[in-house]
Amino acid sequence: MESQEIITTKIVVIQETRYDLLILMFLIALITLVSYQFSQYIDDFIYHKLDFWFDTDVLRVTNDMTNRFGNHWRTNVHPLFPLMTYPPTKALRIVFQLTPAESVRTIITIVASLWISALFILLRLIGCRRIDATLFSILGAMSAASVFWFTVPETFSFGSLSILLSLGIIVLAQHQKISSFWYVIVSVLTFSFTITNWMAGIIIAFVKFSRQRALIITAGAFCVVVLLWIIQSHFFPKVLLFHKISGEKRYMLPPKFTDRVHVARSFVFHSIVMPAFKLQEKVKDNNKVITIMATQSSSPGSGSVWGVIAVGLWAPLFGLGLWSLFFSRQNRQLRIALGLILLGQFVLHLMYGTETFLYSLHFAPLLVILAALSTQTRARLIALTLTGILLVFLILNNVMQFDRAVDVLHSLATQ
Image (cartoon, one colour):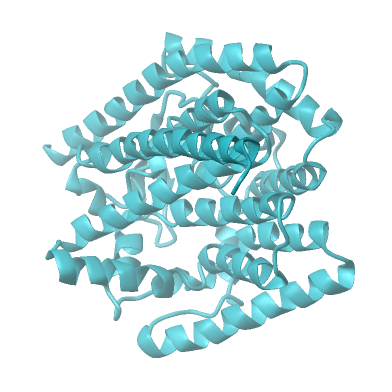
């Protein structure tokens, strides 16, 4: 018979797991509200107003997810996006008789649920207490990036999830032995959705293994992606291979100091606290002038007085996270990988993308994890206090700004 001590330990473990599952159910309900319910408020006019929603192309992404014979020309930078997203979207349409728009919305919501689950579990695995992990997960769920990009069809939700999974595997490896096979899988996933996100898959391989082993894992992932792309090309006739990226030059930023400043403040602040957005003109490749919503030149927290307060709270929390990244004694491999991926994303967007907020879901969860590292230091109570107060003003500001964006879109649709 088992000793009383062993039985007691098992009961405690079961109770602890049950509490985590209950919190996870709450977080999934919250992100479902944000993703699915908020998306209901966005007028279908967004599918016809080219690039209007912060330079995104929701019609193209919807086409990639629902039309096998469409023009999947952006597979040059999102190599396996149609192959990864069309089958589950099609399955939903067949099984539940959903419209294309409804099936896409459902898939995005499922991805959002997986995303918040991955974030919470990762925070628990790195040693965050339950209340700490819950608060920072809510911060991720209600960040500007989450509110604005889990509500429209885009590739960023998938890419963001793949980055979290790459960090998750290196944290999980601290608790149990993980086969190299799984490092190949997450490397394939990061590459599949967005080629620049492959940096996450490559970095975790080199952080965890010797240079030779990491090169083998990286080369293996590349070969798998090429093989899957060949398979994809048989089912999706109009796809491009990812070596054809010369057209990306048009998205490169001019070498101006002010542009770099705009990128930096958008990267650190706009991804978490939504600023005031502006309507500005954009010239397309065919010299057609269109109007889009943009935040690139907006000041941090300019959306409302709540936004100003939220930025004032986020700034020291971000600072504590940076300090913890360098001086914490825990989770060394995670901190190295997190720091390198964040640096890689930042350097990338110093050069690429005229609307940095468009890509914010790729790095917003990294910023949340960075801030959460502060709970592993003597500054834990300060960090939790800042986070708790921040959430109040952050939610007020971000929901208010989302409502304004929806109203602007609706007013254009009814003109």
